[in-house]
Length: 134
Image 1 (cartoon, rainbow, N blue to C red):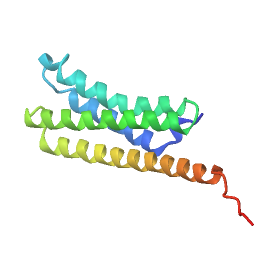
Image 2 (tube, one colour; image 1 turned 120 degrees about the vertical axis):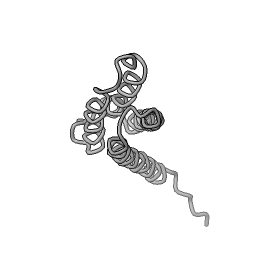
Image 3 (cartoon, helix red, strand yellow; image 1 turned 90 degrees about the vertical axis):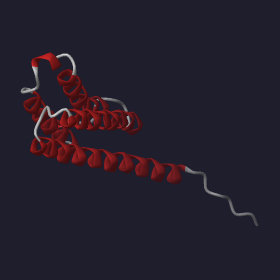
């Protein structure tokens, strides 16, 4: 079990959630159960799945939750584009959110690859060694 608070990717995802909450405070009231809810939900899902994965048993379970986080990050990317195109926030706000999201997605990808590499290395070290025949 890992402490999710120690992971830089979780801290960056948490910062992104705070930015998203602040940016969506000014969305129209009629979007409260639409765009506002969707954007916030998928953003919080990124950090929540990282945290949940840390509480699971083993790297493969952790990896699975990181992949779910990546899916939520892609969903957020789509919602941010739509919100930008609907002019629900300004281009500079969109750029700030997109930059932070891109950083989180990159960090998730690196962490997933790191787990994959570790699993690969472990599988090679556990592989039976060929016996030499006389």
